[in-house]
Image (tube, rainbow, N blue to C red; front, side):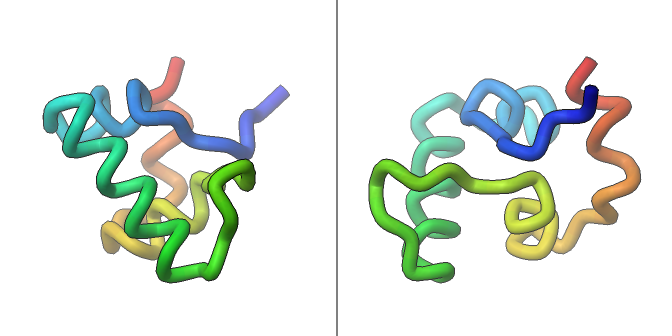
Length: 62
């Protein structure tokens, strides 16, 4: 089963940034998409925000 949601630890693995920076990235994505705090960020939203091809992400999250 493929995941839909991305977490700060996942972003850390992909980008090499600190956990705090990754939490800020998620906060910025939520602000861009007018999401509330309890709503999750999807992998596609993250890829759109960062300009990354979504097809490369699942291999990094295993």
